[in-house]
Image 1 (cartoon, rainbow, N blue to C red):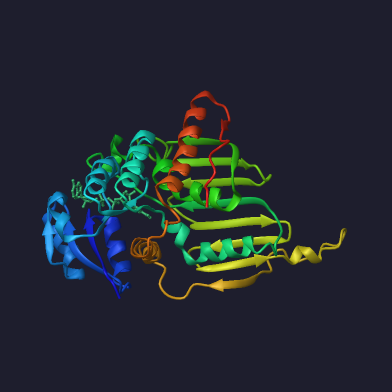
Image 2 (image 1 turned 180 degrees about the vertical axis):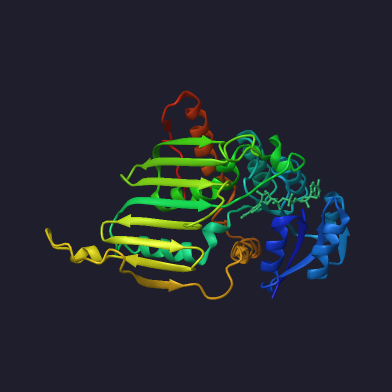
Length: 347
Ligand SMILES: NC(=O)c1ccc[n+]([C@@H]2O[C@H](COP(=O)([O-])OP(=O)(O)OC[C@H]3O[C@@H](n4cnc5c(N)ncnc54)[C@H](O)[C@@H]3O)[C@@H](O)[C@H]2O)c1
């Protein structure tokens, strides 16, 4: 089997997740590892037995066919452009780049150089999310009436950390919510309008919002909701996806690793109160350790590069959720609803 020579760039928190996932794959060789902090590069390399370690990614070019870029957001563009021009395929951590102009320039540079560009949106490759999508697409449960996604976590930065400065490019919606706006677009189709309300109460380490509420409406009539925070001192929902359809309520509970169907109310007779609203059927259970399930997205990237396929979350597709977020941020300043027409994901 042909193996892809992959270089790893940026060996901080997220790369540790990727390193664990990559160890599960057999069609990739990690041939180079880079971090400006050599110790961090050596730590990651020690797990993966990498032959080449560097503090300057520009010296990696001859060792790799592709790179996984896991750098602070403000460095995505310059690093991506360097490897696009060097004709190396790129798996770029989210968000693609900090501005629309940078995203478009990077996408175009990759197209001009015949390079595969994929954004690391692991949620689209999580097995539970894919099961949920398969169930919705089967048509068995009717149309989506409402999709809600909750994430609650405590993510704290000090003012020395890049994410505690303007380098992050937005608030928690831009940095983390981009995963879930992407999922709402993927499940519900073309959006019509939407709004974001953010607050910094309880998250003073954030320059912008640490907590967000998003509401959206789609062309097919479905409604979308996303409630998320980086300031939760406790958690009940964790990371949870709920879809109310014409035939029942489907849920993916990330922590439990289960896809559930609640449909006992289908038996409900008007006037009768002895229904069991909590009764559910387990339709799918995760097999194995959850971690962040990043191995699935890396496997997809490798398959696309080796077999010349278009990634599901290529540059153009992943840009759409950022465009939605930028439009909602702009509208929020004026206290109005954002016009989101023309921003769906093409499959
Ligand atoms: N998909 C997810 O669930 C998820 C979760 C967390 C972070 N991320 C993404 O991963 C990326 C990195 O985030 P993180 O939390 O790992 O940050 P981090 O600060 O922990 O790691 C960044 C690393 O990049 C290194 N670095 C900085 N400048 C460099 C340069 N010029 N050359 C080489 N190395 C350099 C730093 O030394 C550090 O080790 C971001 O895009 C972030 O949004 C994704």
